Each structure stands twice: as structure tokens, then as C-alpha cells.
Amino acid sequence: MSGLTRHTAAELADALAAGETTSVEITRAHLDRIAEVDGTAASGGVHAFLHVDAEGALAQARAADERRAAGSPASALDGVPIAVKDVLATEGLPTTCGSRILEGWIPPYDATVVARLRRAGLPILGKTNMDEFAMGSSTEHSAYGPTRNPWDLDRIPGGSGGGSAAAVAAFEAPLAIGTDTGGSIRQPGAVTGTVGVKPTYGGVSRYGLVALANSLDQAGPVTRTVLDSALLHEVIGGHDPLDSTSIDQPLPPLVDAARRGATGDLTGVRVGVVRELGGEGYQPGVLSRFQESVDLMVKAGAEVVEVSCPHFVHALAAYYLILPAEASSNLAKFDAMRYGRRVLPDGADNPSAEQVMRASRDAGFGDEVKRRIILGTYALSSGYYDAYYGQAQKVRTLISRDFAAAFEKADVLVSPTAPTTAFKLGEKLDDPIAMYLNDLATIPANLAGVPGISVPSGLADEDGLPAGVQVLAPALADDRLYRVGAALEAALVDKWGGPLLDRAPALATNGAVR
Ligand code: GLN
Image (cartoon, rainbow, N blue to C red):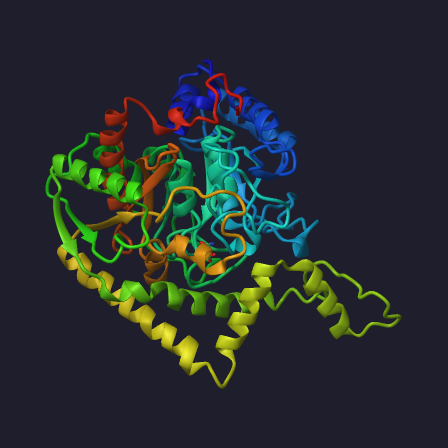
């Protein structure tokens, strides 16, 4: 088998099952690809990875090959390698969350998601770059330098999970794990031409996921196809007694739903176009690609209705009170006494605990993290709690009610995933509000806990950059994402005459990033 890095995870799994290749070959091909294109932020490489574990991945690949040879694979994906966002604890592997404050931390345990990947036999290639503590939409807030978009190395790969999306888009990994608190799986998916899924809140364990905002965070798949996401979701999802918010119910059949959707038939599916997620603020090309996707769903037999979710216009404002509130509380533990890197203040002979905390937090946290700690602390302070945090929680309830009403009329809701295609590195770095606006369409799902998928919708601007279409479903109905997503993907790939990523100009066909 040749061109191992160009295959989907499902194809690699089939080839492994048929004995046409080995996990060691596949894993080595991806490690070679990483060595070839990843580089560092300064060298101008993709810089999707903060840490590559070649030795560990190859050892896991050898074990996978032994299981296959013995006729007892651990799962359908046994031996298919994966990259993991650096916000998930990995035993024996650095976990920094893109922050200086966790530099050098090696967790003594695995997050449940990671434990499940290991149990299913997926070799872990390494840890991917991210905005510090998952705050951002461009991966530029990483303390270790940005990741570049494989479509155009001068542009952002989205965020906060830009590393995972870029690794998959640049063929450095067939699969990756991301986390999505306000869009960090779906928006990077949209701007890199990859597929990203935010599962139902509680559908994937948060144990060992370093919390940004506990009530919003959810880990999920980052892949090149909808079927690959379904395969991965079935590995990582399901009840976990170590997470008190984990849902104690079996997952719906996701892979079956994706296979059914791939036949291209959406007869009987009611698709709701959300009036509030479009129009002003969205790039014209993004809207045209979205409209084409809706037309293709109609052609596939879906019934399209327009729905209104009037409170979605307040989602961003509510999110930027609830998220900083939770984040400021979560980050309080990095006091340099029990947690986090310790920095001694300059010029103090016998520094007090408070001086050490101040110096450590000053050096350990970047500007965006500090901004949100200040915002969150303010919103939670006794005099303002009701006016800000309390009010935002009320808006959150109204948004959930909007979803409930919309799902009376439609089985799934659709919108563009992100308002624009990938912008240039540096373009929005000094303008927090412009950065926050990237998540206009993705945030409502996190506030309500409902699942969402982003599927590439096509090339959406004069520079030939990709955009995404988002499909949302009611909580626990993640299977609908896969059915509708796979049908849409089948229609679009047919229209393009092949996968969209084959058209990425920065990716030369011989495998090198141009
Ligand atoms: N971009 C959003 C933020 O900065 C979402 C982040 C995320 O999903 N982790 O908060």
C-alpha cells in the first residue's frame, strides 16, 4: 500500500484488517510526514505539534500489529494513529495546554478519552498545539507560537484546536482529538477543510480534560471524513463514572448512521435553516457555499424549513460572561504552591507566598488568559453577580428554549460554521472582539449542550480557501449529525470530483508543504 498518509482512517483500518499494511508502516509514514512538514513556529512549518512521541507511537504500533497477527484486534481502529490536543492529560507525555504555567508538566494519569484511545489500540503520535487554555480562535494565543493553516501558511488554522485540525489537514495524522467549548473543534474544521464534531454535552468524558469552562467543554473527533469521525466518536464516547456530568446511556449507533447517510438519501429528514445564523457579518462566499449545501440536501430528499431562534443574538454576550466566570475559577488553582510553574519575584530576598503567586501568574499566563481572569472575577464579584453572571445564565435558558422550539419543527438545524474563511496570522490578534466573533454560529450549541458537526462546504473566497457547514441536532441525537453530515459530504465530494483537501494549494501532491 502506498501513500499511507493520504488515506482515511476507515481505509487504513480496512487495509490493516486485510493484512495489506501494518500499523508500524502507517505510524512511521505519519511520523515521517510530521518530520517533513511540521517544523517549528519560527521555521515557518505547520507547527501542529507541541510534542511528538515517535518512540511511544511505534511501540504502540508494534503491539497493535501483534494483536492483529494473533487475530484479536482491540477495536476497528486498532493500529490507526492519532494526535491529541494538548489539553488532555496523557500519562508520561507532556501536557501544557499551550501555557507556560504548565511547561514541563508530565501527568501521572490519562484522561478517560486518552485511556479509551489506548485501550482501542490507537498509537498516539503526539500532542497538538492550541490557544492557551483553549482561549481563542486562531491558535495564536499559544505560548509556544502559532500553528499555520496548511491551505496557506500565512493564515490561521482556527482555534483553539488549530493544531489538531492542521495535523489532519496536512496529512500528519489521519485522526485527532479536539475540544470544543465555544467552537474550537468546528471552527478550525471549517477553516482547514476538515470535519469536526462536538458531541452532546456529557456524551464524552471530561475526566482528565483540563477545564476551560466545565459546563461547556466537550472533547470530540477531528478527521477528514464524516465516517472517520463516527468511528472515533464510538471509541471515545459513552458513560464514564469518573465524570459526574457523563450521561449514563449508550451512544446511538453513529457508524451505522454515517454509512446510511453516505448512500445520499435524506428522504423524510426535516432540515431547519436558522435565520439568525447568517446574513450580516458572514462573508458572501461562505453564505453561497452554505446555500449550495442546503440545495444539495433538498436534492437528497430533505425537507427544508426556516426556523427562528431569536435569543441566539445574545449568545456571544452570555458566553463571554459564563466562560470567563468558570475559567477564572478553574485557573485559580495555578498558585505556584500546589499547581503550576513557580517563578520567584525579582529582587525579593524572602518573598511572601503572595509575591510568588503574583510573579508566577504574571509570567505563566498570557494576555488573553489574564483578560478573561479579570472579566470572570469581575462578573462573579458580589456586587455584580446578578447583573452579569446571573443574567447570562437566564439568557442561556432562553437559548435552550429556542433550540427546543426549533427542534419541534426540524430534525436538524444548519448554518455556516464560521462567518469567514481563514484570516491572516496577526490580523485579529490585537482585537479581542473581532476574534470572539468567529464563534458567532458555534457558541449556541455549547450553551445548550446540543451536538454539532462541521463538514467542508467548498472553497469560499477569491483565494480558494475552504468554509464549513454546521449541522446541529438535539441532545443525545448525535446519530443525526452523522446521517445528514455523510449525505451532504457524499453530494459535495461528488460535485467536486474528489475530496476538498486534494485542492489545498500549500499541499504539494508529492506530500511536501509547498
Ligand atoms: N474561541 C472560543 C473562545 O475563545 C472557543 C474556545 C473553545 O471552544 N475552546 O472561547
